[in-house]
Length: 185
Image (cartoon, rainbow, N blue to C red; front, top):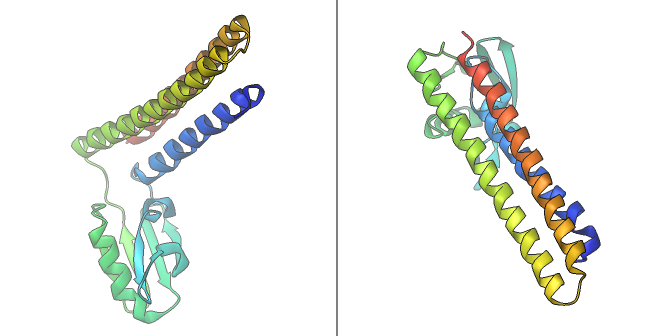
């Protein structure tokens, strides 16, 4: 790893942590129907676990209803079973052509549980950021030991710390925004 590209490499790794956080928060439902709720679901398709959106059209029928239209009718039962197994608290209804999922209104208790999930996802992102920072700091220390100027190394360490703090603030903003979305009735 070249020391000159260190901040770019670290920024890329930290951006990946942010992208992962956003995708995890999309899976936490805030009472509205969104196809992202079903993103993590895989169905058995000719012996292979396949993402749901590759075997069916997932769309929003209205603000409280998701509609799943499989490309093959034989997939209806398989999709229904996969949704039950995903344990999302959603009940699929199969009408022989499509699967409809009504998104139930969230209770206050359920909202609090979802906020805890959002905070946990935010904490995971921060842990990932700290791990990335640690890797970068170790590279800088090794380079300084191998002859890289110490004052330049200290400047790089300060830049890495500032970058980590900035990303940490973004995580807080994203989680706070999701909290407001969840708690809004």
